[in-house]
Amino acid sequence: MKLTTEYEGKKILVLGLAKSGYAAAKILHDLGANVTVNDYQSLDESEEASELVRNGIVVIGGGHPDNLMDNHFDLIVKNPGIPYSNIVLKKATEEGIPIITEVEIAYTISEADIIGITGSNGKTTTTTLIYEILKAGHKNPKLSGNIGLVACEVAAKTKEDELLVMELSSFQLMGIRQFKPKVSVLLNLFNAHLDYHGTKEEYGKAKANIFKNQTDTDFAVVNYDDTDVVELAKHTRANVVYFSVSKNIKKGVYIVEGKIFYNDEAIIDLTDILLPGLHNLENILAAIAATKILGTSNNAIKEVLQTFTGVKHRLQYVETINGRKFYNDSKATNILATQKAISAFSEPMILLAGGLDRGNSFDELIPALKKVKAVITFGQTAEKISNAAKQAGINTIKHVDNVEKAVPLAYDLADEGDVILLSPACASWDQFKTFEERGDMFVHSVHKLKVD
Image (cartoon, rainbow, N blue to C red; front, side, top):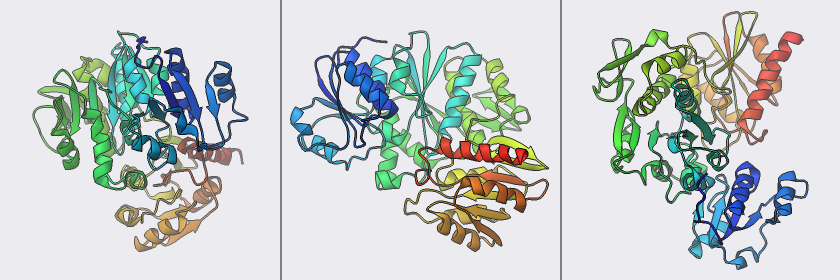
């Protein structure tokens, strides 16, 4: 860890405890900052809060006191999910207090170069692929970020000869000042998180922050097939490397006659790749671009692509029971992700979908639903998705209370050779703390079918 003096002696408010706030508070305290932690939830039963207090950090839970900002903080580190409409952040903005997320701290303390991956869909798969390929190529990667590993906590343990592979959300990227990846990856841009950002334009600006501080010694991996992404990348000073699944771009990563090329170099045959789905092909091309930039061998790339079957909760194969194949795609928290998941299969399908209602309709899902034979809905959006299914001409539409009840019903509705797919098209927060919890319930319920 770089022992930066940037935070030494500064009064810093960490807003929101959770995993990232806990890690940020500890690191900032170790770097000589005067740290206060504030969380809207009560922290009376929190072991993490108790530990911070024992280390001399002020912890305030159960709300945002009116006099909190009287402390004249020099900096605020916010949990990525807290909106800027929060009363504390609004006051900080009015007073000109800088607001960052913990990925900024990760950058300032990391001894390793950073590979940053963002986009509306495919981040986790691409991040994991890059990590696995770099590991196979003996490049000493460390996994971090929005994938579930707090970036600053991982960065604190990195060495100069390692690489920090970091999944980045738009929420995290809104809170950067100096953050600069050696290699940035922008996969795609679709309507997502508009309840947070307001418009697609603002959402795109947040994603484009990944390019903001890059220079001509850095690289930007950009999806040539996504016009919004190409437009956002026009202002980067980094060396742009394009990838395309549909065009022979001749420079970058592309497909010709069933082979993937990097510039003029053939890398791998499509038939040798294990991961299913066209959307995953985009992720694969992006991962090849990023790892080739870093000098990874073709053998390392082939080794991973010939064995990699996907990440947990993202088109994760679970089990085949009496000819019915179960797949867990709980990480599909928006419509596009579910569209892509459906398109990855040619078999008849029972779709399990529903979750948090963010105010959007599901009209965009209707074309994809036309190849689905039955839909089981749950959560706040159950009625909306049921309506979309009716418009798609689906005759079998069922509603249940939760994922656990959906699984045995889906089995009863399915025939041998069918796919049963959990791909909710919604966030999980109406019934679960995380999409991982939702996916784990699905997997557990599938395994329970075998016992029953």
